[in-house]
Image 1 (cartoon, rainbow, N blue to C red):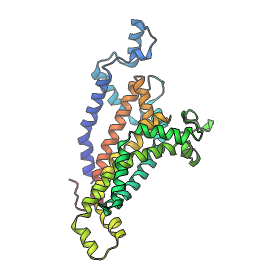
Image 2: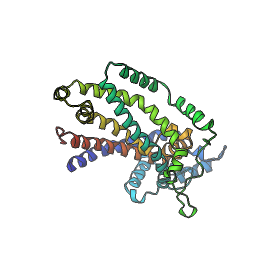
Image 3: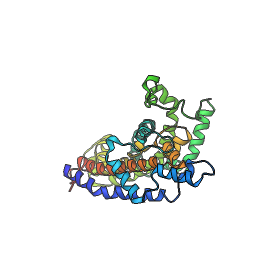
Amino acid sequence: MLNYIIRRTLYNIPVFLAIIFVVMAALRVNDPVSAQLSKNPTEAEIALKRAEFGLDKPFVVQYWDFITELATVWDYDERSWDQGIRVSEMIGKAVPPSMAITIPTLAMSALISICVGLVSAFNRGKSVDRTLMFLAVIGMSISVLVYIILGQYFGAFVPGQNIDGWPFQVTVDASAGESAFFFFNPKNWIAFCMLPVMINVIVSLGYDTRFYRAVMVEESAKDYIRTAKAKGASTRRVMFVHMLKNAMIPIITRIMISLPFIITGSILVEVYFGIPGMGRTLISAINSKDFPVIQTFTALFTALFIASNILTDVLYALVDPRVRLS
């Protein structure tokens, strides 16, 4: 298994480098210097700023400099053009808010949708199944922005809560009593994170429920299910032991696809609820043409997706003895 992980990692290094190359090349289609200067800068000011940002170098040199900087991840010193602080520090502040939203969302949506999919598949064609699928289609047909607007109105505006943003600037200044993990306090989480999590769960339930129902329906038609029923196994045992165990491959696939978003966050929810997570930080960097931040986030997101794909294959082998890593 270790050899397989090493090989897959080596195979994906060219993919990783190619994605960064394409993103860096696309970013440089528009000159970012104008966003960092006054309205009517002089040629001297433009040239000085380009030299400060390293944009006066050939693109290949800029790409190589960034890749070599990534290689020293333990001493990563890329700095934001807009804020002047280290990008690693920005990531350290942005990851905990995103995790406070995405971890509960992933856990709750997976648990609820799997259970609903099981119930719907076991009552296939009955009124329970039709009702659940009708609600799922309605849920996935409505835009996430509608849920956000309704959630802000009925969950925050009407009760009189503040939804204009985070209560204070998130820092890691321990002497000031502030920490990027302050919202993991149950009271703070309920006040600022529960509503965004509920919206994310409602949005994802429609898609996930239909997917898991299709998986369970396919499993319920197989011979081992009929054999278990013929032997007198209870409905609960058939559903949660036999069927669920044999459906783990597609379930793992679905969950692992969502796993990188635990770190990357939910862009729309973070922007509309003023949550200083990874998604909102990235949008701010794009608006200000902050290349170091965008490039670093791209490298991080790419690495997370590659790691999740490799981990998916490893989990396949662990849950299904028929799968061999080669």
